[in-house]
Structure formats: structure tokens, C-alpha cells
Image: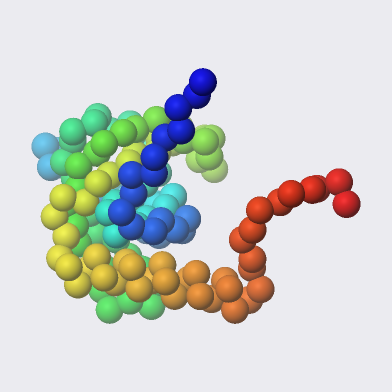
Length: 137
């Protein structure tokens, strides 16, 4: 019998593409990436490099119409080849799950407010989430 895995996330997650500048703390250069999704607990970065689990990164996350970037420190907890496939320029892409280990409460709140705002906007525009019971009709 298959064991049902319990959801471990503490924060709601939202699929969103945001621009992120990151720096692996053991390296000199900074790089740009985009988010695949984000929550108050972490972010999935889509980058050209596969990051090793346990790697520490500094993040600068830019939200549209925001007063400035969110600054955070994170630890890579997983990495795999992206389901998005190759970039438009033909480069391999990797999804890197980063857990926030250092983030100001006000910035974590900004993320939560952005997610709440987007969910409310989707609800107002008529998006509904539900269980599909019969798709033959």
C-alpha cells in the first residue's frame, strides 16, 4: 500500500515568475534567475546552473510595483533539471529549491501579502478551484 505523504509546507506557495539576482556565497560573481514559485518559506529558482544541496545563497528578489527588492539568505535543499526544458537561447535550466534561512519578518510579510493579493485577484476574475468529478460531460 502506498504511503500518503504529508504536506510539510508552512506557507502558501504561488507560481510566479519574478526576477532574482543571486550570489552563491562561496563564489565571486552574481547571476540572474527567475522564480518558478515562491512562498514565505522559500523559492524555486530556475537558473542555468545546478546548485548543490546545502549551498548558501544571497537573494535579491524583485516584485513588480514594489518599494525595493526583498533581500534574503537561503540554503539550497534540492536541485533537478527543469521541467521547462531548454531556455530560448538553448541552455539547460535547473530548478533549485531554496529555503529562506535569513529574511526579515517584514519581507516575509511582503511575500505573504503579494500571494494573498494575487489569490484574491484571481478569485475576483472568476477563477475557481475545485474537484473535477466527471470530465465526460
